[in-house]
Image (cartoon, rainbow, N blue to C red; front, side, top):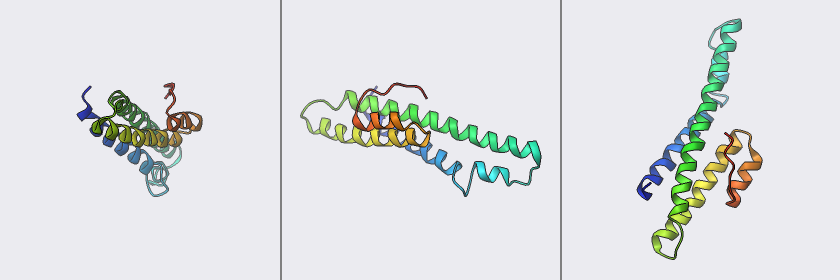
Length: 123
């Protein structure tokens, strides 16, 4: 894929991560779905739906950020100015990918991501 797509994928992944975080905050998402005035099982179903949507957003954010990481990684070798910029963007992308993993509770994998090691995909 073209290096020109990497920043777009990166920003989209960050946006999905922010959406997942917002849906799980105390001011929105799963918690508010339970307060929607629904009783019993309907309330439980609303909370479960909101939690499932947050999980899907995290999975999609991880996939998109990992795609951006792969593009940056493929274009960050060498001593050119473009390669140095891509290496910097790669580090930023790895940080955001680690944030995504931390959000989903995968602390061991997030450390691998920050260290730049191979990340087994299990999301």
